[in-house]
Image 1 (tube, rainbow, N blue to C red):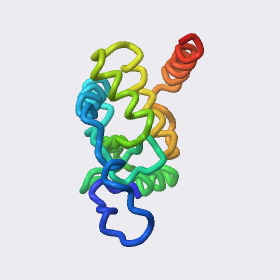
Image 2: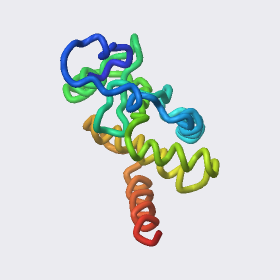
Image 3: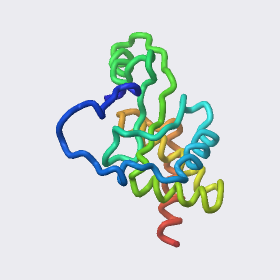
Image 4: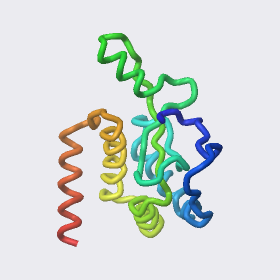
Length: 152
């Protein structure tokens, strides 16, 4: 589902996560502020999501914007489809998002966190079947992050 306004909580059935798991970390607001500042005009907005269970991030269309899949279909058939900026939704319960939230609140912004912001956006684009905004920068950020993880 690529619509931002869809209320998935209204659907019956399935396992309901407990209230503690649904609570966003207190410092998620700091991470959202960092993501908005770092990503700037690359996204329409950044917000927490209740739809995500396993993924850290996803991209959704705002109300009134063309659905992501319809837009891709029109582009494949050489039809003009204006690219609307998407909303980046983060899963506050995901370990990666929790870890980044803690790092932001502990130390503010730095190059590693800014790289993580762009990697999250590129990850969401890849999951949607799109390419990263700047493939060369994506590869550089990914290699740098892997290197930091191996050295640390």
